[in-house]
Image (cartoon, rainbow, N blue to C red):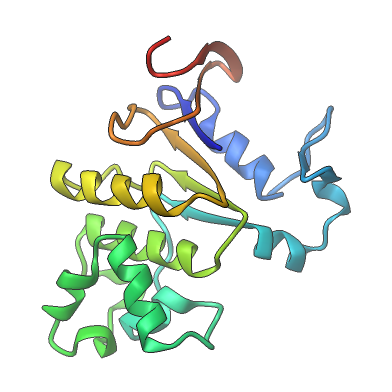
Length: 194
């Protein structure tokens, strides 16, 4: 399933994402994945199940390839390049002075906002999660790049759940459902057409 959670700044999108990744537990109700309540999952199991690409993801003062595969350091170069292609950042990495072996500054200061976001998406994809959360992680990319990433999300995430939290609807992603939230409450729900 591909789900969009749409809302203005301050509507509750990030709070919802924080609940999904157990930054804190809900004060009432339950959050379940595959019939298992999140509070019953170990942190290790949760990290293998859910991957998040936030708007401002943290990058390490490390090689580009190590930022993509963290924490799964047992990935091959082919795997790394596959994740970078899916995130539409491969060609730009090849243009860096040492390609995938280029050292990037703390928090990715040597990269643009869009490049940092796409490396964050590649990292999330490298986990091969059951649930992939994009938290406004396409906000700094241009329309052409957004379209390329959208194609990956449409074509290659067949066995995964995608939750895309955004302040604008991405028309190129084929969402099964769109939830509009405002003030922490669902105010609309439906498909693109609805």
